[in-house]
Image (cartoon, rainbow, N blue to C red; front, side, top):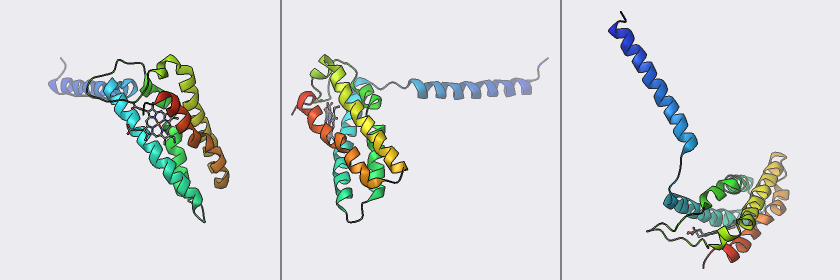
Length: 159
Ligand code: HEC
């Protein structure tokens, strides 16, 4: 006979394991709703605006502000390329949320993707320069990012 104590112990270990695996699974497969995707990408874009401004100030300082440059580079690195594209999946316009994303995005998704992949590439290059301690060189490396706003918005963002 299995004692009640053993039974409870086994049961709680099984429960614990299933909670852990369920959580791991949930983290891997977390799916945002269409509304959440729109809101998230709009938040990220607000971040683009804020970091773009902070970045240009950082280079204007007499002694360039390496802390801000590092944070900006990390922000653009983490919020471009595939990370950003995942928030632009094709969807019907969900009700109750306004979006300025134009349908041209899905008509020429390759071109749209290429712009954000370039942003990601520039941020990665800038990151390598930071690792080498060459903060001054990051200014030029970040140019594609500074220029990406206009080229992407012109075609893909409504006014
Ligand atoms: C790959 C394309 C792309 C790039 C690059 C890009 N944007 Fe955007 N941006 C968009 C799209 C599309 C929207 C509209 C998103 C929506 O409403 O769903 C947007 C929206 C915005 C908004 C409005 C956010 C809000 O809803 O309040 C701001 C501000 C913004 N972008 C700033 C920038 C800045 C600054 C840069 C460059 C440093 C930049 N963006 C680069 C595509 C891009």
